[in-house]
Length: 89
Image (tube, rainbow, N blue to C red; front, top):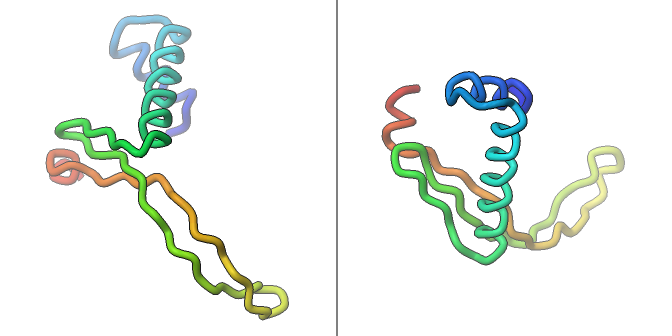
């Protein structure tokens, strides 16, 4: 499912226009992004938790040349599915 399909489904289920559903989805993504940038986490009970994880610096390989390269440490977004969501899969 892509963003357009998700917006159409939300609009249909909630009885709102696609424009309103798009605004709601954009607002949700912006709120989650802002919270994660601030170092927090977002927990949606029954769905899951969005959090930030630190990835340590490490050595990697350039697949074309086989040369060893250094990969910098960085922060990455992480999602852990909740118990209810996991149970439905």
